[in-house]
Length: 303
Image (cartoon, rainbow, N blue to C red; front, side):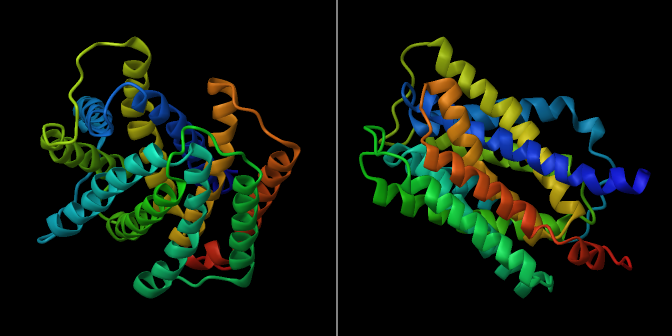
């Protein structure tokens, strides 16, 4: 029973992270309507960093080795620093659903990087699941209609792709460092480095500093800082430490599904019949990509 629970906990953690990250696209859109992207991202990092100050006693053992500051700093540079810069401007130029669709590329990027840097084996079933989920996310995007929130979708989608490259480096580094640092500690490093990084960017043009206090976008920033930054990354980092990085990244294909669902619930956006069918295809692809045999081999267990 305990072994079954241990096998399911990473899956539940990753699913939770995807729900939270799917909602982040909606929260960002809400906040960007009032405040500049760099202001929003700094607020998100600052709130998350404050939360981690109160949780520092739960970091567990930190087995620092000489030179670890380099991969830790590089991890934070990949995400949140560069990732959020590209994703913020992506969401200014494209819709949440199209940006979410681009995230489907991440699993394939991570699978290739994990094979090259970590020696992880990728089964045919996992690859087939990836391709199925990607087909679903493309269908999901094609079935949607363009809106006024996407003034330059081509540029926005390209910037989201660059953000996925940053996320690939981040995922590989998390896997490398997870043997010595807890998921909570790694997430805290991200929040603290991100706070320092984005603070001066608020004062550089073309950023406009806030001139008024509005409750809805402020609540969106608080949600991004506490729930998305603290909860989402903690769950994702935990999942990555327990299963192969290539399989963990497959869950990212669920983000466009959840982002569209949140858009319907919060912003009043509607789904077509085709989009509902595409959502089912994405779920099927993610489920298919989870090859238990590969996971057991990765964990050093026999079938």
